[in-house]
Image 1 (spheres, one colour):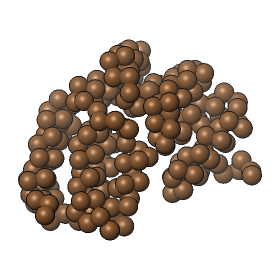
Image 2: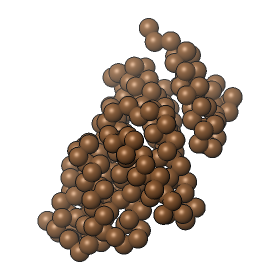
Image 3: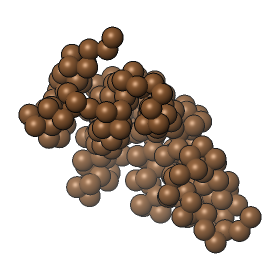
Image 4: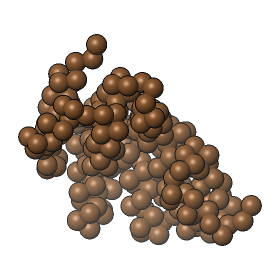
Length: 209
């Protein structure tokens, strides 16, 4: 039988390490109490939030915990789908998370040139990690360099063809470049993988059949 207390404390320890390195908040004691009585849905929601702040492996642990807690629960199906479509294909070393999240912080601080250097360092040192490629795609999209934006999105898809965020980035880059047909194909692929993805569905509005 799964020891939920031990599993949660292990996950929280990982999250605290990541928080210390990346400047993200650690989890409060009251959150630990919620986790000890967690449902698969609770685990799933927490994992999504951790993935959003770049703590990918902590998120992966919690998604797997949701599945183990009740494999037949609808939320466990959500966790499986999220693992397949929104998480890196391969386990991500902590140093890769740190480098990538440093780039994100630089980009949010409007230091895009430094961010590009950091993301490229991450791709050089960890070439099978999708996130720095999609982040580079986003940076170059903001610079209106749609060719490079599309190139980096395709690099991410070469690693993981089911990675929905990369299809979304590719669609935006191709749309920015004036390739409406290619953009439609990319957004359509995103909806095929995840019919509930609101960004892809919104992007396809008005594009016809």
